[in-house]
Length: 112
Image (cartoon, helix red, strand yellow):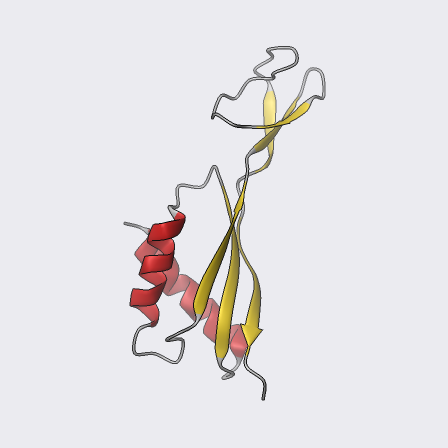
């Protein structure tokens, strides 16, 4: 369960950027190609933040669907299945253009 160590790292980043202010919500984007289970991440977040200044801060996860672009014909498609082949020309020379993200995108902080 590497989500636990990921949450520990995220908590350190959030603390640094919150600069002592109360954090209400942490917004993250996770690409479909990342080996991260969103529900497990949310659960681990609650464990890592328990009894800390981040306790009660909600972790909001936005999933980013995987999208590829064919190097041969330029066709772009969102993947419904993890088949790395162009639906237009069946080419296998594709590039992942979305779906590898793992970003803390914003923090909702309490009013001062």
